[in-house]
Length: 85
Length: 190
Ligand SMILES: [Fe+2]
Image (cartoon, rainbow over all chains, first blue to last red; front, side, top):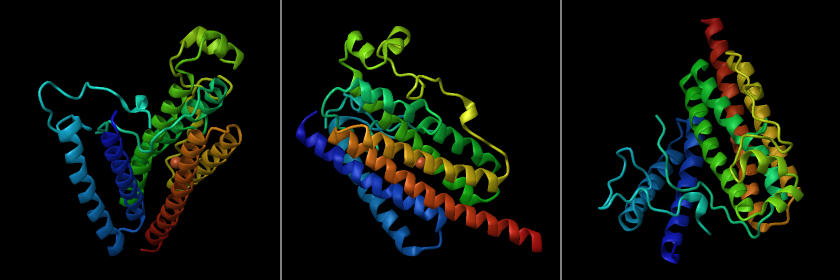
């Protein structure tokens, strides 16, 4: 995995981590506006960057969530446990 | 339904092979306070939760625990992937090699296979949320023990991340418990 792909992946992991943290907080504080706005902002950033990543390196999710270029890109490695950070 | 996302929640960096550490770490894969137990406990208990908040938090934390299971699996995989049978034998994994070669398996640090006895479901939301809070503290303590057993900075970094997640999960379950108490009390009076 090249440097650019790895950097993009790390950025996706960071954005998603923020989203998960806010998600769990909102589950028990659904009426708070600030974290909700932050969640929506981070989700949008995450999805934009995810689209960029998937266009370059293939889908991160299948089952209808992301399209694939030809040939079917999903089967390409490295798989998550094989990546050297 | 569940969707697989082809990436880890947290990057797993392993500095050097370490079969001995893998033997200890596997308890967070298939041990009593491991991530399989955690995810199955929460995803199973959600069906008998009385409020939407409680159903949501169990669904989301249960799902995050599946991602933690993948982090542990990745650490174990990386720590043992190039080990010879002799090295596995020396680290106390000779029996594991005989039965599973380099495959992962649902066991604890002493080789005891995973059991559904590790998880409870009373159908009583107060009892179940207490169980969940205790489970988070037990997982946190186990991560602290594991941190004491390694000097690999990559492994320590991932274990610290997982330990912090248990602290956050404990907090969220505590808030959910308060909320369920309030809900049950309000039902009593009206
Ligand atoms: Fe947890």
